[in-house]
Length: 450
Image (cartoon, rainbow, N blue to C red; front, side):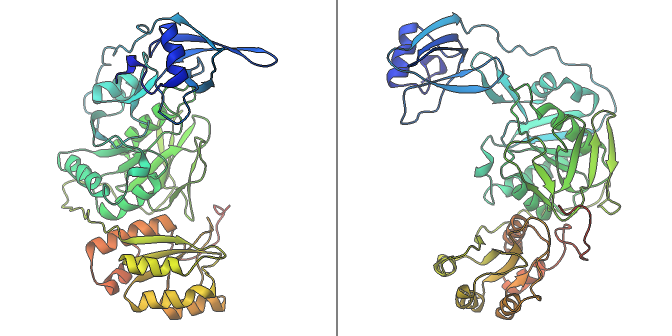
């Protein structure tokens, strides 16, 4: 079924739209009769997802927001304007500047590297560099862009089964001479991917910048263009060679903050400044007003040329992340053992605690060779399992404290560790070795703790 066949509509909504002669992309007027008043909604008719409820019509308002309008048999729909115009026309490419750094953009999904189809109101991937230049023409003055779509999926579908493909795609671009690589990624699981790549791409000679957008490019408040432009400048010119995440530092368009890939967490569902560096200061800031990078750390891996480097893209998904809560059943631990999991990342309370009822199951797991580590479900602070008897008993069982490492980072690291080594003892050694600044060597209470 094509878009012009009222994609996604059925039942009463399809009947009323057909009666009006409306097609996807038309501007329509919906007149609603309520009990005490009459309401009018006007917008661009766009496709909708099929659900069990047929009595909704989805339109894009002039503000850029999409809304679902509940209709009934008394609803009147009329066409205000046909959908042939306006339509997306790619403008002439901006002039290129010679000698700019070469930056490759790899799109995995999300809205950051996308454009709007003005006929349907839908957001679609930007297919190539010319598309990106047309959407963000300022890119032409920052870098020589090469772009490709690796896959276009929601970020919740990206995990250890796809991380190797991203690693290999990045390695291919670096070997081809890229001065930096951008990975366009949905924001929901961006932190997991950033942590995974930090280990698999350890030693890479150029920056790898993961970037997303909290607001889609069809909204006036979109952060897509500024995030992408900043990421291109960072990837092409930054002196560091690490996996980082670049997102807005605040709700305004003043700065983009550069987080280390192993230290970042999404802390808000929708704000532009949703991402925070946890238990560490950001690596750098990019000043959008002055187009300048401000380093915020003295220690970082240096950008370099001509050095030998090999990625390690192997991951083993058989690792569980289990969050402790009062009443957690021991059956969860036993199930992980029976299912063939090789490791467990516990997200304990406070300083790294779980209920004593779990101790026998954890002891059985450790005796079976399962690697069990402890992170805290608190956002800031470190695991300290020597303070209370609960923590000391867990360590005697064989549970390994992970300091101030984020639980999602510990999960990605253990999946990667089991991808490199099959021996649980060697995996334990990897887990307590600081590979990509994933935990603090010394514990110092700093002002960045909130």
